[in-house]
Amino acid sequence: MTTTMQARFDKLTDDLIAKWSSQSGRELLAAGMPIMPYLFEHGPVPVSVADAALPEADRHIGFVKYYSDRHYDVELNENGDIIGAGISLAPTADHISELYGKRYYNWCMGDVIMFPLVFGVDAPAETICPVTGEKITFTVSSTGLDNLSHPDAHMSLAPATGGEIRHVFCNHVNLYATGEAADIAAAADPTIAVAPAQHGWAAIKRLVDDIEM
Image (cartoon, rainbow, N blue to C red; front, side):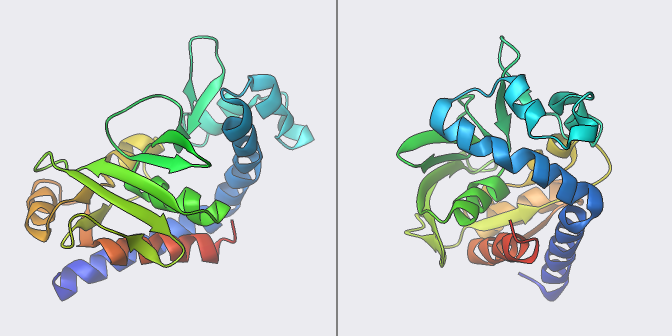
């Protein structure tokens, strides 16, 4: 990782923390985190349960619109229940993790790291390198990415503002099998920056610690 690329990665980390430390970011977290235990324990979250997590003055807006107005579109099933907000019940081949003995699907590599750190659990996980197609396995722990199948794996970060969160950020935050694969991705998408996987883990750990999730 060049000095310039590291500086870009660290700047994106600073910007990510600033986003979630802002008033609107903290409001989103305050509204969203209480629904996670329901998602883990019961599955799809009825919108009535999510609406009740909003501040009383905002409940007339409804949880889904409240989030959408802040460029964060939650995932819904065919019944209109919430099944995803960073961590998801909707199966996908990418960004899979195991929490509390159950398999979950994540919007991005940042979520794969963040939720185990927030809830204080070790989480076996796997993801697919977007460049090589290789499966990368590891365990997210309180000290890093343990048992990383690809020792030279690199992680990307992207700007977290400017549009809907999955479009501008999540779809660009991945784990790559090698530094070379990550460099190919960065050359194709100049908005991202890449760094070794453990550096990426440290960035998300800093986010969790700084905003006191």
